[in-house]
Image (cartoon, rainbow, N blue to C red; front, side):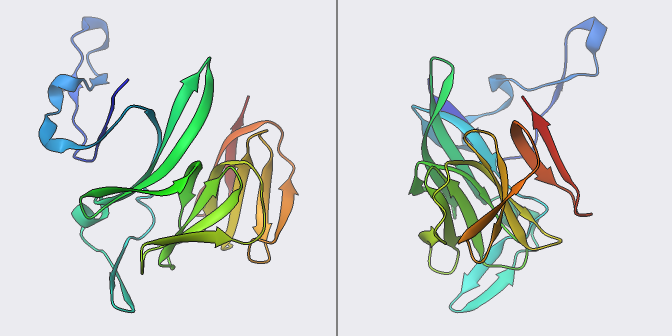
Length: 203
């Protein structure tokens, strides 16, 4: 099934159902091919656009922050996967940048970023990787080899956290060489707010 990835303004329309007129509805009819950025034979299962985190433009060795929200929308990460008998089979992790889509990590699952760094951290089936905005390169971070399905940055502590394929949660220590288990059972997804609170839902 072909999946379309759109990076544009949020388009809404009023539902025609008289009983629920305030429910916003988005259909293919409301979005033209003008906004089409990527097509795939696989499902696009994660689109990571951390709007509460700063984006970067790199000029030689200098990193400057993008103040224009339109520029911020021009960078995002996304993951593709196949659905095999109800089980998600991850494919690759991509970046959409400067109007182009590029695969940056095979079997990548998720991405996150701290607001004060010119790089993003990527979760994959064999550990953590780094995407460097300076030279558009990807490299292994630390020595962990966990099968990661989600990775998150805690901005208050500067610590990375990840969720494994078997739904365990860990924090990352010592530049990606050690991990500490968090006492959460069957976590499906996690998130942090800016007051150092961790949220999750289980199975």
